[in-house]
Length: 470
Image (cartoon, rainbow, N blue to C red; front, side, top):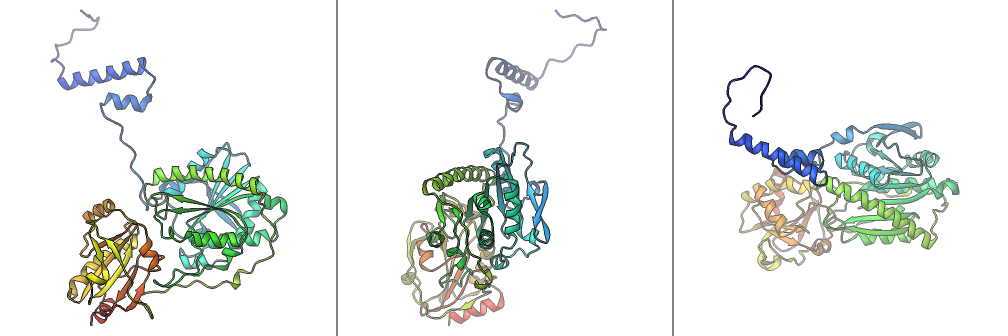
């Protein structure tokens, strides 16, 4: 029996069953920690509490706290210094820089995580991020980005080649246009030693088209696509808007003399590491980018490709990007065949099943925010129409039945969804942006199209729906 030299204390009540279980849990954790490979503090606490550790919640597209906390630096950028974000890396030794050139949208935590993981994947590398619109005092606008001449690139490259032995540049979407223009300017006056430092240019789902064309019409590439001669890797999401047409961009780049590798990213939409599964995708893309660097190095050694001096290129001669707003009248188009299964697996033949009806045919995807935003107004518009004369049919781009059924539990839809699993129907209709919609009269003639979201029950739009239903 244990004794004490202190004054005796009153007898205590027997321990509760809960206290006994807790004590046993702590004892079990201690035994495991001593007898087995150490499990670490987190594992010990999890064992002690008899609970499984919970994964960290994923970030949302709108979360930006990590990016805002990144340190900044200033580099020469022409008349004014450019402010860049970076990641503290004491192991960076000047051997390699990864320069990320941002798109029009606001940077989020996906960008910050990608930068951190790039440092982990390439420990001796420095990572810089240029928030292009913010640094250049531009509007966060796709048209403005397409029309920029890229004059920020040569001074940025001058600073990068001064500090680093090897440079990889990564950009995405429409930011590819000013980057390629700027690199072409830089190539015209950079020395051979400076050009040799440009190891690799990575374009993530590049949009090199003059405009997002009116739905149903052909696109036109900016001439810079065929006036570029660089070592380029293109990453194209398998579910992205250009998945079925990216070969056209690759062919144009090769025509200009670029050494081009194409990598497709499975089961991924545009945005890649910024939109969904941000934690996992930022890690995955950092690894893919490091591997692409190695692969491009091998390709350059095998082919002897060098970044050459090129004559000056006048970007002011290129077409100006504009935007077609609202419903645009269409001439010379008629309703094409659409034979697809609906969400229940039943085939729908749009010409047969909707004969004699005016149609709003909309192409969309569950990952497209503007597509989702317009669904409630489509429901309201349909409720106001004579359904004997008018119908809405939606075509889902590369979504699966499982994704669609889960989506419809959250977002009610009063109209059918046809599943374009391969994207071939969207390609045949010349749909290059989401959402894209067509208004088709009762005779099968396409009267209007739009390649942005709309408020479909707005009075002016309802007038168009009634017009095609006559």
